[in-house]
Length: 475
Ligand code: UD1
Ligand code: CA
Image (cartoon, rainbow, N blue to C red):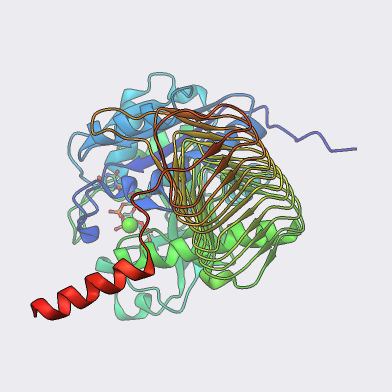
């Protein structure tokens, strides 16, 4: 029986610091909005806070501290999380992390009703529920005033170092550290949990008497105080993103986390390194995914599907046993059981491919329904069309759907044979069981069971030869 998730009865507040400018990114938008796997860095932090709120606490408040280009951030969360309510703190000037927290305490009148306050950074997308639970457990079981999440790294440069004392610990910022302190490998990740009362008591007393002239939240950690640390393994997950290089590294780690989860559920990957799958995608156990595949958005891949190499799939649903062969691009489409697509096929939005239908190489399908068992095997464009069950479409077929102003619909019935190199000029309707001769241009509707042929003047071998001779003579 699944165990009921244990919830804490304490009121909890989660404050995400996102007011900084993030100048090192050089992308012209606030760092928390920098895109990582099609979402903003901040969204991953918000998701973790929301998970915590829904799973762990009966009563939790999430506050976002904004400052630099704050409208962009508030607009973004309004769009991404229309159903969630976040508290917004405005930090007028970015005077340091302690000032950011002070702004929150000043602007949230009932802050004191939350027993614990978490502080997170808006630039650490891989922060997880386990990290939050880990520090909460430490502060509550050991009855501490503050707990910081730390990691041990061989490259501590730039981070606050954790100095341990007989009692408690202190955090020394890089700029203020002497050579001895700089050797310390245990660093501050910027994730903390405080007893809100303690935070309230000490925040106003923090000064900016340091090299950076900033109000450091880290000054809340001092020797002799009841403060502690939890050191986490896989420290890279808790390090903030400051540069585009770190953004790229984090993208790969985040992706790998998604792939590991899927492979534990039974999805078979040839190569983690070249496969990118967003966490929004669902894939059934047993699916096989070749190298160089990207699957994004709201995509669902059913049992028994095989996704060949170099395929790009977005917002698409594949039922069971579907084969997508190499170099195919699918966007906003549905593919029913046992259909085959590709290689080199392009399915555009609103393409619906029926059971056991076949869409072959260099075929583009847009806003069309392809009936069960129908075949469009080579070099065709099908747009705004309905193709009936078991109809066979030859090579080089085109639905001429656009008259320069409007798009028009083509309907082709069941069990038809459409010869190669044919075109239909829409709007046009071909009934069931029709036969269209190769090379025909069909611009009038055909009743069921009829034969259609429309070609230019018959060209014979003879007059071809005569023409050729004439051309030679002219030269
Ligand atoms: C901070 C820590 C450092 C730690 C590091 C981890 C302090 C003083 N130092 O340094 O010990 O190792 O994080 O990454 O806290 N922010 C605001 N308002 C401000 C200043 C910052 O909202 O006035 C936000 C930033 O947007 C960012 C977070 O706070 O999300 C951290 O600020 P940042 O300036 O990046 O601190 P670090 O110098 O990295
Ligand atoms: Ca930082």
